[in-house]
Image 1 (spheres, rainbow, N blue to C red):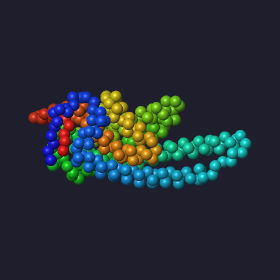
Image 2: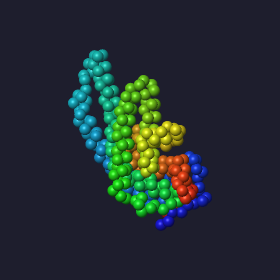
Image 3: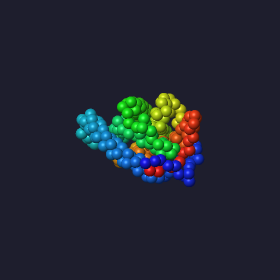
Image 4: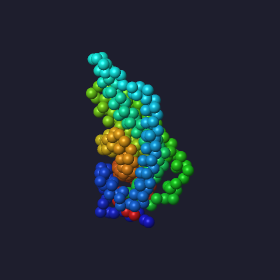
Amino acid sequence: MTATTSQDCLPEPGRWLTLGFSLRFLSRNFSLLGLSLLLMCGTALLTWLGYLVTIHFADGFTAHFFQQAPEAAGIIGWLKFKGWSLLKLLFFVISRVIAFYLAFLLAYSLTSPGYSFLSLAAEKRFLGKELAEDEGFSWAVLVRDLIEGCKIGLFGLLVTLAALCISLVPLLGSGLVVLLYIFYSALMFIDYPTSRLHWSLGRKLGWLRQRWLKALRLGWLPALVSMVPVVNIFFMAFLFPLFTVHATLNFVNETAVELHSETPGSEVQPGVAGD
């Protein structure tokens, strides 16, 4: 199976590639589509299991507090009951969102080698290149991808803690939390192509900071989907391969094209490669 480049569909280097472009690119490459389906199932299963375990632990830890509602006798009792009800509702929503992120970060870390390979394969197809044998599976690559995934996962825990603190800020707190998760979502997907270039976390964050508008465009939809309780487990697992390919293609068109062109004897022309 050879990778061919369609000269009629060459995107201009540096131009933003839409999610529709990435979807068409993915759907035309059956090997990428098959790998995406496997990763979907693995991510959904690991996230669901992690979510159940986390929720069971959180509910068991606080069950003694929420099992018995205070008596709504008199004004003070009524206020206590309403406060208890509101606290129970807030705990339910916040605990589910946090449980999802913890479970998803675990699934993200464990499946990162697969998504890294998907990102590499998408980049090669986009550039019209063959996937070299030494770029396939190896234990060294597997360990490296796991380490990079764990780094981003641990950074995500810090982001979650920061989001909890920021959410307490009146009026602006909720908006700042959404922005924080948008940029973190963009970081998760940019991590795949940048880790192969041995970029540090600081350089990845710097890339997003310099291109903050593109970071917003990459991260807003994943962040929005991840904030819907329960449904987010399946939607994120279903859309994660597409988001990975989408971020990879835009990174390649923005930055990696220049990096490849700096290599002596290499001429890179991004395009849409088919099976």
